[in-house]
Length: 188
Image (tube, rainbow, N blue to C red; front, side, top):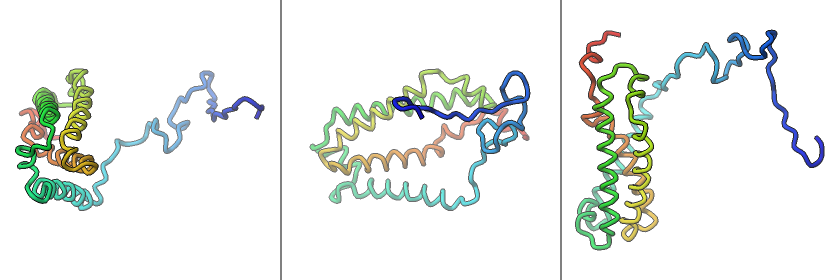
């Protein structure tokens, strides 16, 4: 290594052809993400009870939060009647959450007509997913500001638990199971 400069060593593949690029699947490594012989990625279905227990723990934690609230009254009552909550931040956070649910419902109805996944992704508006991400982050921050006077630093894990429980429940909503008639009649 020459002093004062960094020297990077890059492993290069040399092919017998003139181009220097891989021309067959023999040139690719076995564990390479570009491997041509790899089947589609498979979901780990060997231990479904672990996934069930994870989902159950998230839902049980959310139920505990909703039921016990601040140990004097439940979460729903606190959100509706407690004076310590900053109402403007709470209402803006709820508005962001309603917008997210509206965009998700719109996308579910819009995408139910197409059969293949690549056709579904082409159908999405380009602004939908980034908008949902920004609205989700904004609603989390607004809920944190609104609920901070009650739970202080415990607000963050509380909201994270409620958001993950919402994510666990979302596949069971009516819009998640919408399928087109052609998709239901397919035999393959």
